[in-house]
Length: 173
Image (cartoon, rainbow, N blue to C red; front, side, top):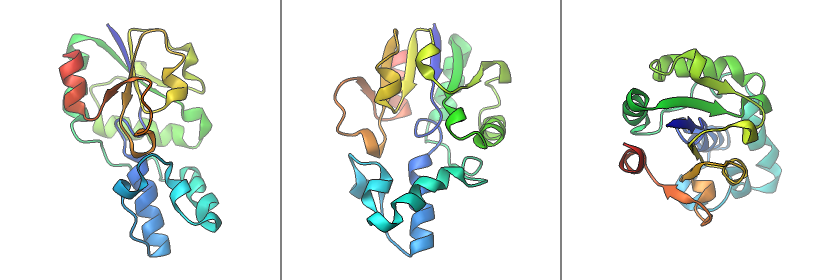
């Protein structure tokens, strides 16, 4: 089985990084729980929305993301049984290419560089399973689409869902 796994908000906690940066810079107290169903930039005052959107253009943003709980163990187990690829739309943020590659080296060394797809458009992916947090990627995938829960997508009901990496293990191992 060929399994594609997104990075941001699936194995790397970009959503919480936005919250942490904003809270530090604006002395705020946002939590992910109070942002359910929305992108984080939609939760802040309008005059700060562009600042939040610009986080991803900062040097170090992708390099310093925390690992989503359980993702390392489950992905390592999956990679022993299946062909696992990390597929990230990294071209949206070209400066992220090196940071994402280094991050994968650090936290997912069992996924070789040959199985890392840092692309622009995921519509070209052909395989059996795509695990992603974005409808725009899952909707065009011809195989099994699994939406990984992130605060921004809690209202989406269109796809099979996994709330945790334990859910992924139950579905695919």
